[in-house]
Image (cartoon, rainbow, N blue to C red; front, side, top):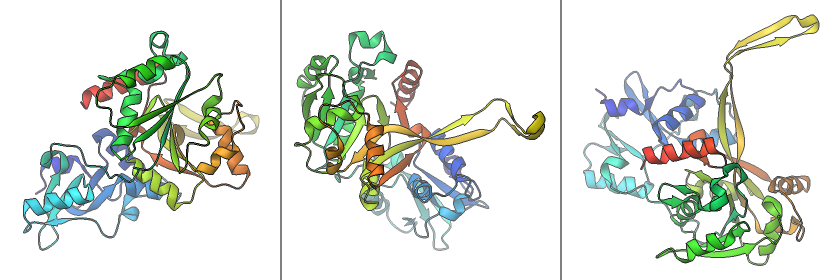
Length: 357
């Protein structure tokens, strides 16, 4: 008999990918237990869904068709220490425990077994990160009349510090901050941050250069693949997965795209000639992928940026595409992306982090 905690994080194999993503977001989990006829079938991870989306599979696809043939499991005769070690080795959020008939007897959850978060790898230890921290934060006024947007607090820390700490957990030690508005306040804050375990290099726009134009200032300093992030977003995703996708696909640029669900609260009418009704859709829901504001770039992309010229990163992306370059999109779920660029989103972000503190 399945216990309630297992039932709460389970899903049926006939559920769609979209239903699974939404359930993960509601539960704030990256994996679900797949149960069929009250029996264990498999584990579904956010990575399984992301790989399917990258392969252009429809979000209406039943999850049964994207389940991995082999997953990491434990057996009831194994000691708890051995199972815990396996969870640590593979950074497993939940570990199914099976008996000799491959029937589910228990599930160990990371939060019950360990006091710390899932340990990340150090795969990004030689990868620099550029944070675009020079904007005026006009949509957050009057708050940004006093402090710059990168220092807007989420709990007890400014958002740009949270971004840096998320990357540092993966081994990143070198950050480049593009600064302009209230740059002195940003530098003062980090210069006086005790025991800061990473390096920050500042480069300042003397005039607004857009979301990509300022990168020409560090052309000679970046020597490898690198991340670029806006200073007003948080993405709860293992950045190692994004980096590996970028490398595996041999992309010149990778955009991180967030799924966005939008339900129209009205019936939609399609009409033809003479105003004749062709079809009706009652309160349809649309899902699309939006640009989250995080990117992975190859070093040579910097050569496409003109010196001291205003250019947005979207223009840079179009230039690379026109030259035959590869531009990929790595998808994350809607609730894995937090944007504080406007007051409504900022309030939602504060609420989420307070509830999950």
